[in-house]
Image (cartoon, rainbow over all chains, first blue to last red; front, top):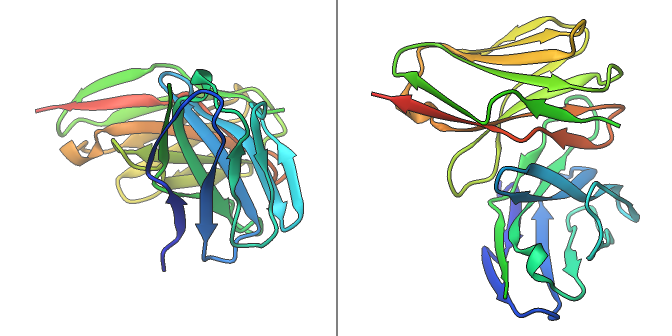
Length: 113
Length: 111
């Protein structure tokens, strides 16, 4: 059971480039989320999804797009990378029923130069 | 909405002592709280959770206390060990939607 898998683990982008962070889970969870973690800021919610075809904005959605075409995958797209998007990104999933325990991936460390 | 925050960004304790990490939340309608542990270079890992209809919940060496009157919860770690060194986050959820995290407390264990 792989849980939540994020790729890549590390990425360096130039300002203005675009890229997609991948997230996949094999637990048949309905809820998936993307967070960014900056020093002293904790985890801030970027976007989340409560099921395939449904997405919504979190606290810091600007500069990011998401889609949820399948239950398993929840990619995060940076349309035009900026240095302010340098951060560690975590994807999480939870069942949405019963307990609300979220399982996290190992993170993607993104640097925008 | 919900916001959560921890009282202290860092906490140092002696090995073998008990640790208490505190957290406050803003939304009195929040009905579920979770504590996570994050080790360096890893994603957060679930420690223990508590629902708003409970005041206390115990796990292995950990206890979470919830005081709804003052909107405060705490994580107590008994007999702290070197492996407990990590950043600890509390998170709150309302209505099974967004899970919102506090800023974290870094726990350091002194030998």
